[in-house]
Length: 447
Picture 1 (cartoon, rainbow, N blue to C red):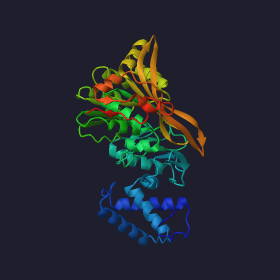
Picture 2 (picture 1 turned 90 degrees about the horizontal axis):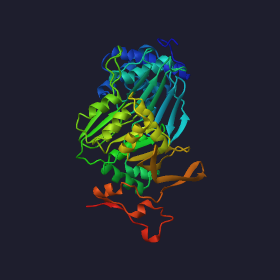
Picture 3 (picture 1 turned 45 degrees about the horizontal axis):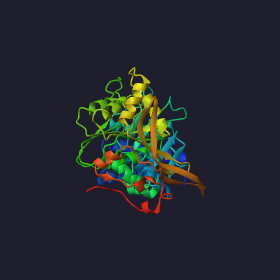
Picture 4 (picture 1 turned 120 degrees about the vertical axis):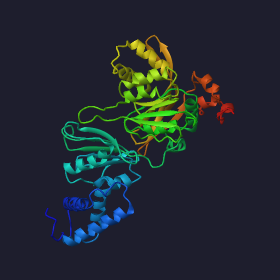
């Protein structure tokens, strides 16, 4: 489309609008070279508007409303935002954005995926936005390195894949960063857990139990990890280790570590495992690993077994039993020739509690199991559920169920009491079946 010195049509297709947007944005970018940045100063916005008006005047671009306003908004998104997906990033109801090539963009709202009418002009347009995201972080993506993890300035997690790995066009997946840090009260209100479960988990974190949060993709593991980390006393030194920093700890004494991608020549790569090993030299009182998905699981277990109790991490697994199997596999990925029996002893010695999170078919997220790892019987890891989610059916598209205790106290109750938590027997009993004399009691930390 030849846009210069031509009157614009009174109605425009999305292709024509995007073509014009990119042409105008390129002209403004050239005229303001080096002055346009993300989160620009007000005077920069004024300059952009001034150049926009001049270009429209000098090139005879006369658009009726609302096209003129839409064009300026699109240009602004290209220059100081992330192009067509910028409105989705600004929409607080959107929790995830999925770009499947230039002409297919999905979002998640309230746990449900829906297709939007947002489009990019072509593959190059998508790749341009990918470069805009990763270049400030010193990361690159090209045919030789088609995969990249990054984060936006607000902390949102980004994964991008370009051809040849992305067959149908460049792909961008953005897990949005919540502007308001969710609290345990929010999770209780959402029905993710009960007040009794929250009180129990607080006791476990403060009492320095080693906890693994398990679940599938998008089940809310990182959100729960954020909430549980908020129970860590403020006077403890915490080291966090992540691929892309997204944890929001409010304690003062926090050291945040993030992996580094390799340089084009292959050097300079720093992995999660490198950071876990290094963190042991940093006098941590708590180690929080965003996700264990490789050989770093062995180093994490060894850290838990050598005085760094109270550590937390997440792992991809669908059940508590699967979590143990997944840990075994990850430990073996470390390249150490360890017998499986030794690996299992390491696991049961290190892990105290598995918190299983799930995204149900209606989009809701719930803790489905809180499970104690009790030990070994022969070659079998013995586990005991403390709380479970019992599904009761479905009504109006919503999963109906009940979060309840199973009636068994954990074996580490004495450890909780040592740290001042005297939890009543009623907390571990199904109140629908508990004797009336035990009902209505709430545990609290001893003073």
